[in-house]
Image (cartoon, rainbow, N blue to C red; front, side, top):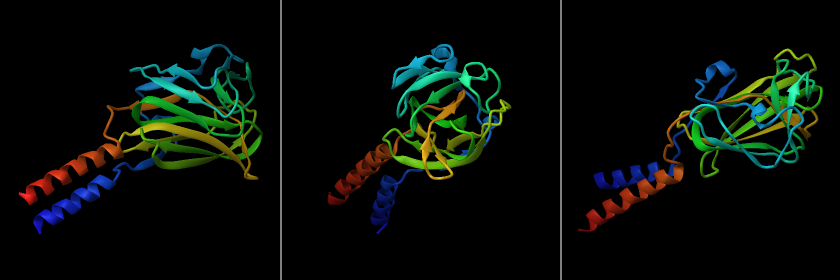
Length: 219
């Protein structure tokens, strides 16, 4: 009976992912180990390949960036972006209505940035998080109102995983009428950790232990 309970427990272990997501509402909540500065890719109006790769400041590591259409560097107030970021701040402008995807070469505990819709008025920004197997971990959202005030009020959107397994995030904007739209994001902040076993790795560990117990039982 004890072996049966042990096997059942291992089977449950093999099917579970242990992370829990928490929404972050401020950059101050992130113990920043790495960050992306979009000005590293060039001055305002620099057109970028899609996708492209940028290296973080910090540890560092590479991040692959992919948008639904064109990607450009813009600058608040002085270079093609009249929005809610701080004056002079460089942003990544993602054209088109699909998600902007950031995929890191390592997993992270936290990731976040300020975000704004490419139109004036109310909107909802959404961030989806995925692990290294593209397993959906969860999503968070934040409401904003776009203006041209250049006052740093673009809302912050971020997420934390207790398991430190955030490998990819997808960002998109939804208008009040339900239609998606283009967006811009500023400096991306990361709190990174050593890679941890993904859910599939835990399954391999669990299945291996199950096989070992079964072999012992058959002897």
